[in-house]
Amino acid sequence: MITLNRPGAMNAVNAEVSTIVGQALVRAEEDREIRAVVLTGAGDRAFCAGADLKAVSRGESLTAPEHDDWGFASFVRHPISKPTIAAVNGYALAGGLELVLASDLAVAGESASFGLPEVARGLFAAAGGVFRLPQQIPPKIAMEMISTGEPIDARRALSLGLVNRIVPDGAVLDAALALADRISGNAPLAVQASKRLATGLAEGSLPAETGAWLRNADEISRIKTSLDFTEGTTAFVEKRQPVWQAQ
Image 1 (cartoon, rainbow, N blue to C red):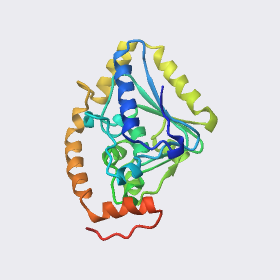
Image 2: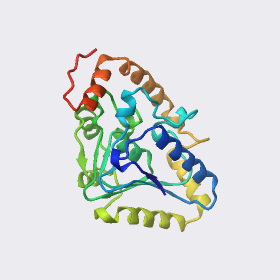
Image 3: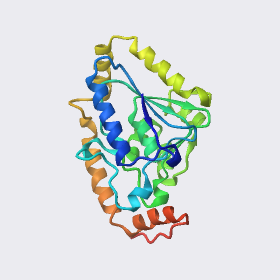
């Protein structure tokens, strides 16, 4: 079990979180006794609210040192052969939803909500959200979420197939661990081979996504040099509405 443990910051991801998560995934992949991984957030308010925008506004990196290749939270581009389960308690927003999209399975509490609000901050969902969400739910619904930034609730997420099941809020982690236990009762090599074939996982990466990640990098490099990006993050820190200039 991996817990994002910054409840005071709604479990927002910074470089320290990325380092710890990345190291945990390496251990999980190497340890033959580990059959599945559950990812959750501390507290009941948020699974993860995405990137630590205060750290971003200070110009800090959010990735683990020497491991930019692992992506956001060292999770979204760090696939392993063991099944991963997101246990979603509360908000899964921005990078938080992208962690769910990068997980193989997801269990959500009744009050969970899911959204990609990056466009309201001068960004886009650059940790895989803009191309993974349309693959996992109907494309028109995905485009609405991506372009409006509006979230959906747990019931809607279940009906769209974004999560596997909904449970009472206090039972999310138990339900995820029970699912992990069910998986762990099967032959581990068979489960891992099945995941590799189902996802296209090869040599620690997903080759089918290579082109999407290259285009993603090109677009985010342009966005990060825009005035709107600076304005969006500054307005967030200053708790005011941004003034967009489309440049």
